[in-house]
Amino acid sequence: MKFGVVQFVIISLLLTSSLFMLSTADTSSCGGKCNGRCSKAGRQDRCLEYCNICCQKCDCVPSGTYGNKDECPCYRDMRNSKGTPKCP
Image (cartoon, rainbow, N blue to C red; front, side, top):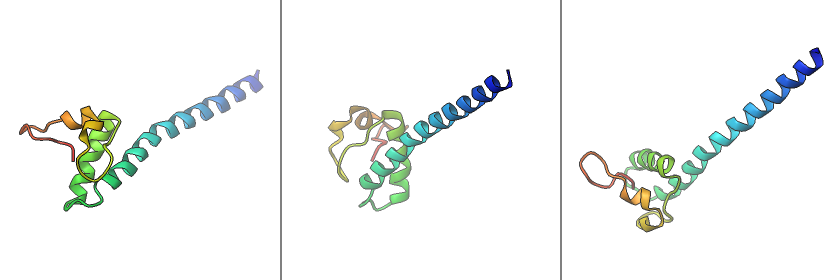
């Protein structure tokens, strides 16, 4: 009986750590893509902040440092409260 409980706990811990690794993988991929996107921005801190917000919501970042927004319509069409493009 105790052996079954120990196995259950070990399997649960392994599954939990796997799910945690998957959830953090998405964030790091956004970070890498946004670092490239914002590499030439005048205000890198602001560019990275908004790029990461857009990437997490849209699950994509256009290639290059500027333009190419047609590669990701969600990213292209996201607007701020003033109606201007939110994503860099």
